[in-house]
Image 1 (cartoon, helix red, strand yellow):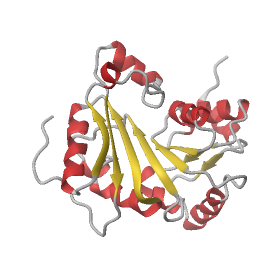
Image 2 (cartoon, rainbow, N blue to C red):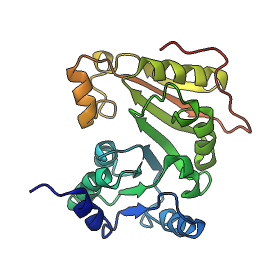
Image 3 (cartoon, rainbow, N blue to C red):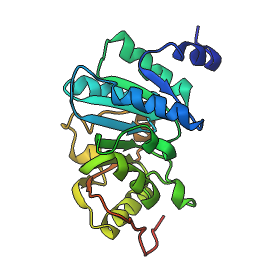
Image 4 (spheres, helix red, strand yellow):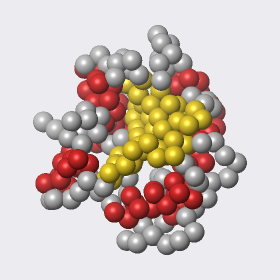
Length: 233
């Protein structure tokens, strides 16, 4: 029998690899921040975030591929996180954890210069709401607080709009592109990292949608700029 959301919420409270802190009091944020800072005491391996991790498919698959790196999946939906967190516990993936919180307060939970890379797979393009785009100047500023200098941001999307917007953000801030393609699975079918597919990604592929991918280095600055020109939808 499938578990209900209430059952999942109750069970996830006991998961050792899940930390929950949606918009709440500052004391709880500090408490979780201290726990996250000591989350992987057995090593000092690079720490990588997946934002909007959903069911944690990317987080857990990356952890399997790179046992010498640590991963934290972040999402506001506890019922989604449940799947990845339980799978990680069942497989004894000690380099995986999950944080249930709102992404726009992400820099409350990690110390400065702690994160090596950030993955943002298939976020909502937020065509009409710039400040809600997870790749906007507003969020880039948040990421800069916790990323190491020249830390890497990865974006996968089915949205032409968001892909073009991201390239404009990169250009406006003189970031250096590591890699980009507007048809990922046509050109790069052998890269194990890039070919990890989420459930929803496979649905889009079945509909014939092209998957775009871009990664870039984030240099630390005082101010980050939005593109001056419009973006074609």
